[in-house]
Image 1 (cartoon, one colour):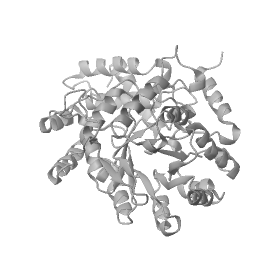
Image 2 (cartoon, helix red, strand yellow):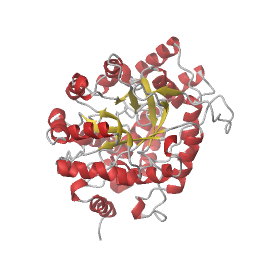
Image 3 (spheres, helix red, strand yellow):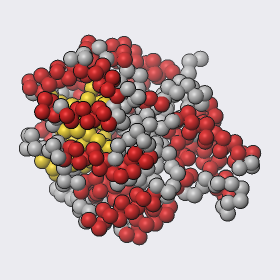
Image 4 (cartoon, helix red, strand yellow):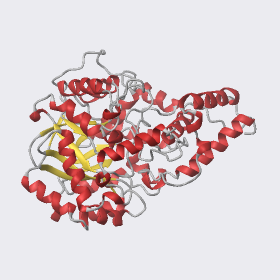
Length: 469
């Protein structure tokens, strides 16, 4: 019998065709069910529909909602109701989320051919097509990650397929996707966009109006970021997408030496007048699932606001930010974020300092910098890599990773870790099944040595099981 995961993978690649298939297809859309607390100063259900904060695109003069909808984590149906031709996406719920967002002023929707097993663009296009075209901006990407898609023909096929899936005749914001990712950032940049003439082609598409704004999303190799900005006079970047949050502002390089602090990235864009689109304002949810001590610190300061709202207000406070993306899978995610941006209450200088102090405290807790992007998936050996890492981080934040058997809460922590592990990650997908093939490592935007972390967590689990910690 075929492995279901392998079968889905082959179906996905077949559907896109050999010329437009890539190696880094994200596995699924919906993370495990952990909704952001609602919070907020308004009673639930009383979110104003006419108070969204907007930023002006300096090129077009168009008003862009400061809250942007990230379409990487659309909700999915349970296996019994999922349809293979839709990637299992719950289209009815997607429609409801999009309707609610637009009704409250959200007009920026960010997707990619690589999201949701290749079905995000289709689901996003179906939902948005039900609204007038002038009510929303679509951002998508040329996601030609794999060498099999680096040819001009394959990249062109992927580009044209985005128009078909999104049901549009122009794209508002088109990005070179994840430049700088991997160990050979400059080499990949040349292969994906420069040597094959694709960037020159996209520049002509912008001139023709089929692309209204052209930019890139940056991950990893700072040489690529600096090079592309050094060519700004030639390419005239309309926007750039970067990872920015109050932890990465000054600690990104400490978390992973390959990363670059957001303070530098944002500063380089601001001094050139290039609007910044913000991804990972919550670090894949890590800044909404912080250590209990951090939760208490934030709640003491603002009891009526969610933990997540601090991160969104921080990102939105920066004046050269065009929009802040959030992958809102559930209605309560959307509602909580609408409360943060309808309207935005910018942080004061003192509140910003408070968050930087909070970030310093967070660095004392040994969480793994996984943001649940799922770029590492699917694992050829069936591991649920994000599930393992997120469970470990959850236990760190809740104080359930004892250092040894002498720890005061050892018995309770041991039980919480082991029981929670089996509940959140199926046995056959746990860390002990990692063989160290390293296939995942080059795909991780955060530069995590995933096999090393899998081995470390597996050893920790075995010590807990054997009582030999």
